[in-house]
Amino acid sequence: MAHNLYYNQRTKKHSFFSVKEKAWHSLGTIIEDYPTSAEALKFAGLDYSVEKRPLFTLDNVNFDLLNALAKGIEPDVSVPNYYANVRTDSEEVLGVVGKDYQIVQNIEAFSFFDSIVGNDDGIKYETAGALGKGERIFITAKLPDYIRVGNDDLIEQYLFLTTSHDGFGSITAAFTPVRVVCRNTLNAAMKNQQNTIKIRHTSSANERLKQAHQLMGISSRLGQEMEDLYNHWAKIRIDDKKIRQLIEVAMSPSKEVLTNLHEEKRDSLSSHYLNIVENVYEFALSAPSQMVKTTKGTLFGAYNAVTGYFQNVRNFPNGENKFKSIMYGTGFQRSQKAFDLCAEYATLGTFHLN
Image (cartoon, rainbow, N blue to C red; front, side, top):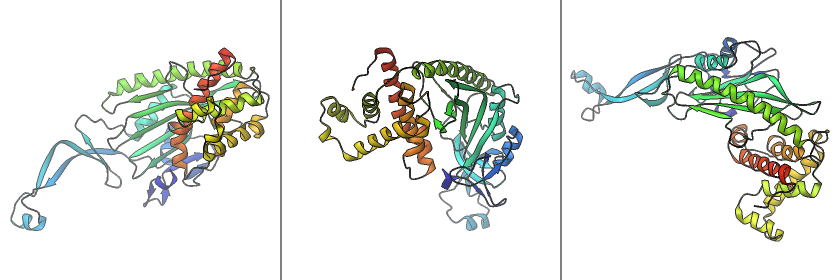
């Protein structure tokens, strides 16, 4: 994502801010105290607006624009039902949209967050930024409450929002817990629950506000359910052999690999896959975050080993690839599989190799 952060030629700054800690890309503005939504907007370079403007194309008969103008011929033809989204401070075109598309200004995106928690002092904006020419923005905000596993293992609760001005994708807001001890994203969705809300750009402001409060309700409920679940898992013992089996299944890239595991044909498994399993297993048994009471030899620790691998061990080409993997790619899928296996083990005392 670093290589795609917007660089403002006028201010000579990247459109990004972070509180206290330098981001992995070391770009943007680092501040010491949590800002208000208005301050965050400015620190991140998101204090610009976007306009929908009519689209025109050259008349096919008059390719020579100067010639056409000299002859008094109108060279432009209106493009019906389509518009250009233009960034007003730089006059850059961010995307082409239809007539029903509703722009959500950056200030409205922050207001969306403020509305979720009633605009009190509890919500803390930690990062925000713009990608490309500013066609996509993202915000992360920390909620005031923690998920507590045991006495000392804390999981912070975050809301993440991304929206765009290019006509692609919805406004997406998600609830994401982050374990303090290792900054490890735990993004597993509870069974039959949703931790993400997607809102179309054609939705009204009232509908967006309604769904904002819906997300807060989901976050509150999920936070309590996850706290109860993780505390339960932290009390369930699991031996090293079972931890390795769980890792093997969770990290399996295909049904063929699962079949070979089930039939104990490990000679048929690729060295790449086996190395990944070994790295996750090593993290599970030796990482400092795995040595505390809630994780050492526990089911919660087994789950945290898989999620922790993607956050702390695996090498990615760049931060954007890492973000995508953890939020909705391979990292998310493997973590979800680990979550399902742990849930099965907590209920049955075992899990199936499938």
